[in-house]
Length: 432
Length: 113
Ligand SMILES: [Zn+2]
Image (tube, rainbow over all chains, first blue to last red; front, side, top):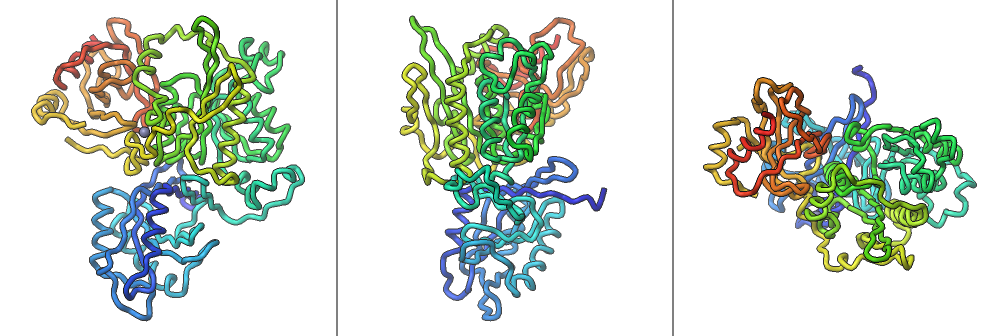
């Protein structure tokens, strides 16, 4: 077991990334470059996959630099002590960080290579149970002393760095090259989870396959039934009799469009295979209750995963009205409770109806509109092609066919108090 | 959410192993190694006490396992509920607000009788 390769995924919230860049860019009276410490929690997802989640950043104080012309930034024992204290208090690992102020992937300088391993060694002595190392930032990329599968910055656009592989030019994607030169290899490397392969999820799976999103994890514990045939894309009449699992319908559709795709099919509730969800970089959710949304959002926030949620409803209020929503729940920004979409009142009403939810109305076209919109939000998030970094809370009026910003969006603060960045990763229980 | 010191002490006299954590805007009191009545299987579990309104219940007690062997059938309407990175189970058990923490725990535990 010992020599089995350990895959590490490193996730950094955008807010921390911005804070690091701002701090490290500031000139110092004499030090040539600045240094800071990034605290990170490690979550073991499986014997060979670790998730490292950054939770806080500590700049080195102006007075804690030593004037040494030989070295870009030499820091004193005060600075190291402050980092040690952070490690103890937060019970986490620590990364020494500094900036090479250019674009593209940085690499360690001669002095970096000479001096930094010593600091990492002391960090490993202080926090032997955690992941420690050093990170060199450029304006838009990283060098990491630990070998990582991916390093991502969770925000808009989603910054994803993965080991350089040659991408093969494929005519299949000829017409979507405006998404950016890098877009196809981003689609090839990102791991996307779809929760629920029903009316919404089945449109999403099909479209992600067309886009060339290679690594998909699909969760659905249900089998195809008569009542699904009105909207489950790729589901056919004979699947009903054979009681085919919906995840197998997903496989059939996606593999036919994009045979190279790498599918993980989970015929269970995501709560029964949470590690498979936690490893995904982005989640698209088509779940059918508020309580499911609440749990899904909490889990995504804990593991720094953007969640794109869709849903629709038909109400009878003396004439039918159809409505739906697409929400991007971005860690560090407004959540579904901030937006007023998830409320105690809705959760209570839903709980009161428990057991007799019945077959709520669901039809193919609004599912398609909402799923397509969600896929659009996903593509923009990953490629940044539109440059629109505003949050997403779209409201769909099925009677008029209009999609507009939800009225509550403009009144919602972008700061979320329900989910704090320091609460990501392993829960922080305080003994009382 | 902060809990009054005297109520915590009172709760500790029933369940000594307590900690608190927050998730999604809710504050939970975690009770490790909570001793349940002898007929319960298992009869030692971890639990999460949520003293505030959640899912339409004024307060809730989540168990780390589904508990069998109860003399009265109960409606376990919250199964595999994901909170604080773990799966939990709860009985549909309405408790009116206004109780002290220790009372709250005992009233929720009475569902197991
Ligand atoms: Zn919030």
